[in-house]
Length: 267
Ligand SMILES: [Zn+2]
Image 1 (tube, rainbow, N blue to C red):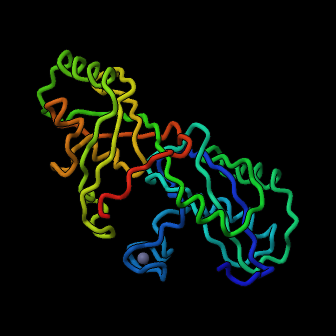
Image 2 (cartoon, protein in one colour):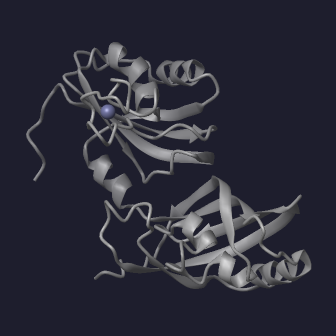
């Protein structure tokens, strides 16, 4: 059942691109005080000055004369991951809006302009609440580019690595089993999940490898590279036979919805 119609709740959807590595998608509340303000966060209640949510809200809220907002992303990238290509879908929800006619094209341009090169938002249109669930339930494969760096002191045979990577590029997608990463284990149930990945291209850049990876919805890419102390298997580290980590990650594309996504391995 839909909730009762509330004339003051207004939502619009759109897409964003993110060009920096220090911007979270939503307000990054201080985990210690949960927003109240403490010594850890210098009294601000949050750990970054801005987020995509706040960059949008700063322009949208006064224009709609709204009081509160929520930002719903179609998934989210880590704060230090850029979101390139055709961007990521989002829904911006406002409560107690006193206006419902706002030039959305102009709003998008102003958000983009005031972000000073950090984000771009586009394709805005008003939408209803059903879109929040729709965009959250749509599972899409993604294409990434990772800068992979070998651990300091690791003995690296770049010729051997090249052969492994060439082999992987010529192979089909393969399955990896991932336990919940240590970095999110405090807020997610610990379980094994099976996801497919495909190495689509690679090149050497100095002592780094630039690796393009296509992967199923819900794959932890950084862990697929590092192995996360053996919690992702196989990993690029194990395949290359040398410990390596992802030092920079970009989402290059969010593909069209997966027609046959695997169910969660927990079920
Ligand atoms: Zn705090």
